[in-house]
Structure formats: C-alpha cells, structure tokens
Image (cartoon, rainbow, N blue to C red; front, side, top):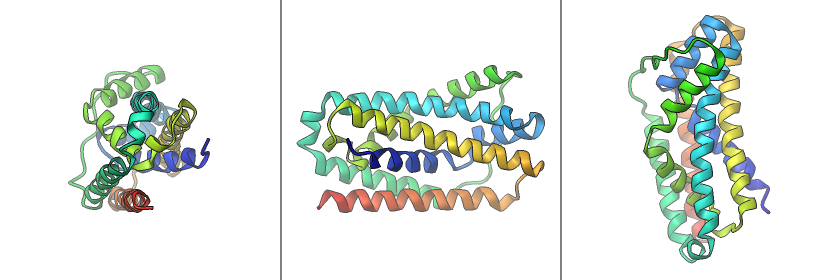
Length: 204
C-alpha cells in the first residue's frame, strides 16, 4: 500500500476544486449571507459528488488492474497530458461566472443541490479516469490503493471548500477580483506539475 497516493490525490483534489466556477460563487454567496456552515455545506455537496465519481473510476482501475497494468505507460502519458491541458486552461481562466442558482435554504438542501449540480457533469468521471491514470493507479493494483485515492480526492476537495468558506466568513466581505485569477493560476500550476511528473514517471 502506497500511502503517498493519498497525499498526491488530496493535493490533486484540492487543485481541481480550487478554480472558482458557478458553484464556487454560490458557496461564497451562501457564506456571506448565512455564515461558514452554509458555504461549507455547498462545498460538501461538490466534494461528495467528486468522491462518487472518484469511487467509480477507482473501482474500475482496481477491477481491471491486471489488464491496465499492461498499458501503464500509455495510461500515464494520456493522464499526464490531460492534467497539463487542465492546468493550461486554469492558467488562462475566462471571465468570472455568476453564482449557480439553488432554491434550497437549509444546510442539507444546499448540500443536496450542489451534489446534483456537480454529479450531472458527464465529463467528471472521464476526468477522474484520466487523472487516476496519470497518478499511476494502474500499477498500484488492489482496492486498498483505490480507496486511498478516493479518500484523498474527497479530503482535498473538502479542505478547499472549508478554507474558502472559512476565509470569507472571517473576512466578512467579498474577496478581491484578482483572488479568483490567482487561485486559478496556482491550481493550474499544480496540475501542470502533476502532468509533467506523470509523463516523466512513465519513462522511468
């Protein structure tokens, strides 16, 4: 069991969650209106959806580990290239997006709403499949490694939402306009670094 997989996955989960899209704007608004718990509840829904898709991808890797181990090198190359592509996209983010609209007013309803909004994105499971390939999950056979990755992705994603909601709750006002830009750039840098590492590891 490679415990470092957990920490790699947590950092990756944080980097993926960090760019502020419509759900991020929603969590910021909820934090400003109703406090830390409201913002964190929205982030929890997103982290749970990420965890579900990460679980599906990880189970697939574990179930077909024997076959996937035979093509570990091309999988790492594809996964690494995908992470670099995601990182480059984050380095040049588009204009700020408006907050996602949800009618829920309580914490449970907010969590459920952001979970549904996140899990209805069909690209998410494809993204996690490519990212897990870059992490080398194909060569780390077994369900124990898979669950380490799932736990890392969920923990990293949830950590980001707690940091974001907690920071806004303490500041009690909107973040500067450049905040989203720099968060996106840092996230992009992390993803590019992971992508380069994945491609380099394929040739080791």
